[in-house]
Amino acid sequence: MHSILKASAAALALGAIAVPATAEDLSGTLRIISDMSNPAPRAVMEGLAAEFDALHPDLSVELEIVDREAWKTQIRNALSANPPDVVNWYAANRMLPYVNANLFMDVSDLWAEPEFEALASTKGAMTINDAQWGVPYTYYQWGVYYRADIYEELGLEEPATWDEEIANCQAILDSGRKCYTIGSKFLWTAGGWFDYINSRTNGYDFHMALARGEIEWTDERVRQTFANWRQLIDMGAFIDDHQTYSWQEALPFILEGEAAAYLMGNFAVAAMRDGGLTDDQLDFYQFPVINPDVDFAEDAPTDTFHIASGAQNVEAAKEFLRFVTSADVQSRINGGDALGQLPVNANASVSDDKFIQQGFDMLSNNAGGGVMQFFDRDFPAEMASVGMEGLQEFMVFPDNLEDILLRLEDARQRIY
Image (cartoon, rainbow, N blue to C red):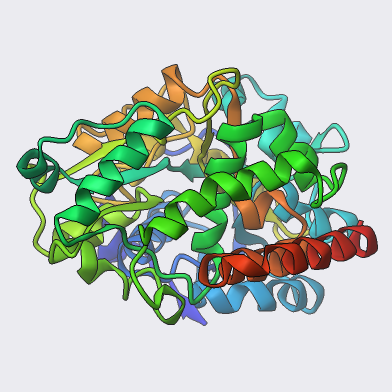
């Protein structure tokens, strides 16, 4: 257990202490378990806990930070036996098992407060059975991050259509490079490619109906998604042996110019900058149109805080949720020097970071189709696991498609 002490120096990482909320005096202990284990998110989480602790002199905040991947298997036990007050998790379908098991507390009363109107854009992602089960604190765009210097060298423009994407890819291959890096060892990166190609081929509503188990995996429209994807695979667009790399291990290919682009979330920008790429070398574009009859849908995963149904200090937990969603805190923790992501509070300020601005503009003005939470969040956990195994297999052995689709359809019928 990592205890946050009063007036911890970590609080200074978030800037000046905010004005205390005019809530009832809080006392006792507030226990938080967070999966914000990577260096930048960890610093943010430690700062949040220390700041909230300092705002409430009679309250002691205890923070435990666990590995992000390990938390995915630990959370149920943590919520069942001696549960903490507050935990990190994810929006949409990823909440469903814990809502159904009565492990997350209904916080609809918070959402009824006037201040929460500023979070309206994310309310749907926090709603199950007409109730809200947590609060969002950050989200971020996905898209194609590419080497602008390589595009300039080859005389390429950002593609707006699939035909232009294919043509650009051929020019990149002809130059002796791969079009895309990817590390699919941990499967979820293949899910990102499926999200985009399926939603661009068939639309957001179709994609979400598939996620809900309402459409067969052997449907011809799903086959068309894989046919579009296979165009890139058959060209040799992706780096070799990507199934042996994590997403971080695949970074050197774009850093060293052996691949020209990476379909990834905005969290990868910090790693690419740390790897030596300047903002003049790196740029971003929205995944192009495949079917002009469907509107843009975007992956914008939303990270969340929840109160355990067995929480011992409910009032302090609710006040912490108010705190982390306030406009001031949202502005600071999502800034370019912190999480480097997008605030969920509409009254928060958006960092002047180049990529955060591009993502904010895209999600605000050009995502009319809808916002997806990502394959392993929109699909139920068991279906997501089986599905991503199939997606990775398809990328390596595309001739196995029929067997893959039959397995996924069998899983759909069993799981749903």
